[in-house]
Image (cartoon, rainbow, N blue to C red; front, side, top):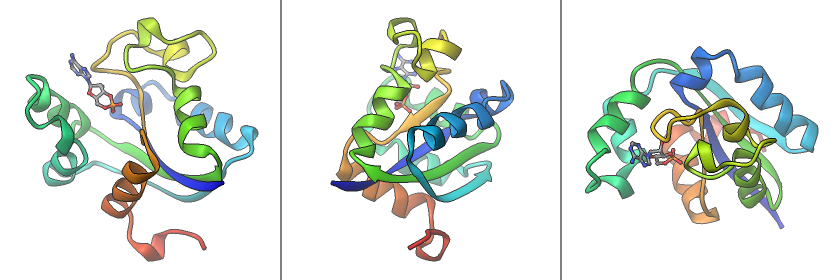
Length: 139
Ligand code: CMP
């Protein structure tokens, strides 16, 4: 069924010049970009986004990294996009991500893994509402 997913190119992905490459992969796959913006996330936004990792030892590092520079946030729409976008991203650890995936091709460190993608339809709904106003999304 037609779903929406929240994707963010993290500061390391932007610094490596990967915005175009990442958008190109999703566009060519056939997903529709229904919202897109670049911003330096506030600490408040970052803490809400990573709320499920609040108790992890790396939470502070995670928040300081994601707020360290510009992030390109976008929303994709299409059939099965939540799971498909994650398959195209690879697994959390870039060294275990298959070649051909975004992390498999462009990253090494788990803490600098280039991109975020929603892990479920429920997470996508929460994250889209956190990062975007309703009027920033195409119908
Ligand atoms: P992401 O998919 O954005 O969601 C949670 C993030 O936590 C994950 O990507 C990693 O970048 C980060 N992460 C996971 N494990 C560790 C770790 N051991 N040390 C630092 N960051 C981590």
